[in-house]
Length: 147
Ligand SMILES: [Zn+2]
Image (cartoon, rainbow, N blue to C red; front, side):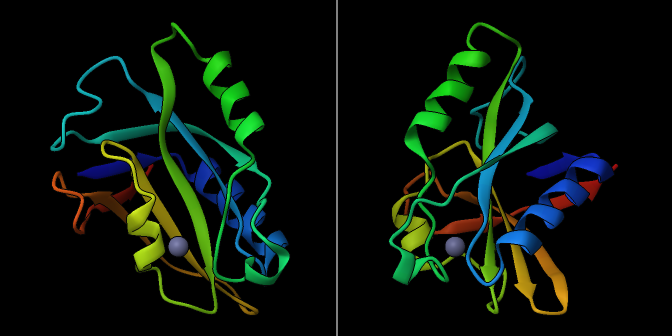
């Protein structure tokens, strides 16, 4: 999988997770679902991102995220019936590498692209994209192409 993402959207994501540091920041990736979305081999074209509040327990916000379910549902509703929709999820790993945690795997949906941004006090660092394997037992790393 290749994740195509406009530079401005990538910058907005990096700004968001810089603001939430040292807590995890999270949000939805909005993209084209008109062709091939859901196919495990398909590329993902991001058009926009929607930052969402991290509702995780305050003591775990440095290594967990829990997206506001109402805000998530509202985004789903907003795009219902459109050729655009939710194609993935982004979140940051404060002071940790951009590799998914076992917790991330437990909660991963198939088809979605999972963009993880490593974040430190110095700023946004390594950035990697992942998709859950079909058997749900691992993540497969994709490629990110900033447009
Ligand atoms: Zn994570």
